[in-house]
Image (cartoon, rainbow, N blue to C red):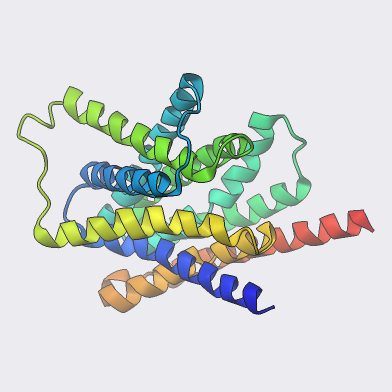
Length: 295
């Protein structure tokens, strides 16, 4: 029991770190693409050192490396659109809309894996759409940020489904190592082709370096490695349910740090509450449904 409690507290700490990612994105002065470029480089190096220390074999075949590189590009695009959203709107908008990832994943997974669509997932999706409608209805001045955040949620759902297949064959840290490397190479090629490097490599100010190291090492490499470790003790159901607290932690942190600039309309909070309620209830109802079938 003590071991479960310890790992549950650790999981909440990890989710808190995930929520803090948005805060760092707002504080870093680089634009979204430059920010993700540095984040993926730092995470790639940190994961490489970690894998080397653990003596893990990185030889997984060229075909698999290319597939993971492709997924890494999707991860990079997800992060870029997420950070772009919070830079042109607010952290609350970005995190509130990102909560719709659960809906998008539930729709993408049956489509890509040819599984039967669950009516529970459809019902949950309809509730989330209602919440998104309220956010759109009352926050029209943040329309570009909302669209960017929803694009980010779509990309998050896509790489989650694709990663699920890869996790059945390869270790999570190895997968992340190649995805971070693939995303970094992809962004580098994009910056090179668009001529962004002609003015030189973007140089972060000293405070940016501190935030980037925290973002790359703590919020990416450490958080991911730790989340994998707690899964050895906690059930997938507990992990999924707790992870849904990320927008809650992030929005509370944003208001605490940035004050009234993160204060939104009543319609936004009602819409976000509807989305989060649906996201929380979905794993609970699904868990009960599985248990009832076993009986």
